[in-house]
Length: 161
Image (cartoon, rainbow, N blue to C red):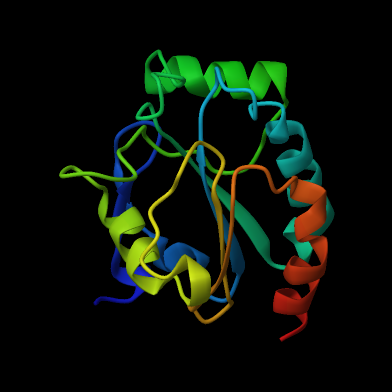
């Protein structure tokens, strides 16, 4: 399958971008929702982003409405909610499907890269998190219950490599 850097995504304004703009950075890709019990994780994600952004860490936020419709609203409404309620500053992209027949290419790639007990596993709920190395390799998948602060050791290790 293609490199993560070749995958086309749509930013929150609907313009095409590739992940290549983040080459050389450690990425945390997260499927999110604004009306989920895990939505308060935005606060912890923003804290991680502020702490590690200058060291080469980026969080990519991909809202998804596939789990009981917990990401209602337009891309603009979701963006406004996250920036006003949780003061998020990390990149956010258009709402997409993370599983099923309309699975977005970025999540098809992530699913194909998961390994070990997570091999081939699609996101099970909102706030699944995928850690990607500076050279674009899949490192680890974290489930929805993994609080952002518990990812620190893995993020620091990836930044040090």
